[in-house]
Length: 127
Image 1 (cartoon, rainbow, N blue to C red):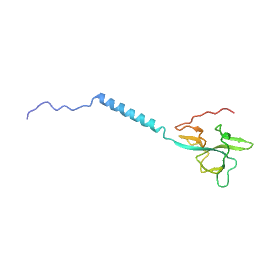
Image 2: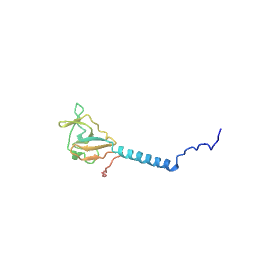
Image 3: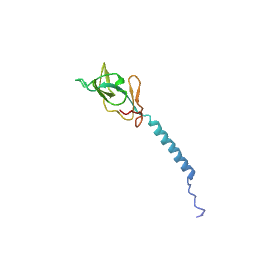
C-alpha cells in the first residue's frame, strides 16, 4: 500500500462564519422591525357610560367630552372612550371600555388617540 499524506480536512474560515452570523443578525433585526408595525386598528367612540341601554349599548356623545383621555364624571354624566364597538344609529355596542394595547386607536372622525405598537403615546395634564 502506497502511503501518502492523509487527505486534509476542509475547515470553514472564521471570516465566513462571522459573515454568516452578521447576515443572520441583519435578517433578524429586519424581521423584528417589519413586524413592529403589525398592530390592530381600533375605532373609539365617546359614550355616556352612566346611561347604558337595556340591550347593552351606550349612547354616543360628542368626542370633545372624552378628549382628555380620562373618564369624565360630571353633573351631566360619565363620559369615556368605548373601543371597537359597532355603531347603530346614535348608539354603540359590542366593544369594550378597556383600552387595547398594541393597537392604533382612532376616532371615527380620524383623530388618533393612540399610535400602534407597544406602549402608548400621549400625555395628560394634571387636574
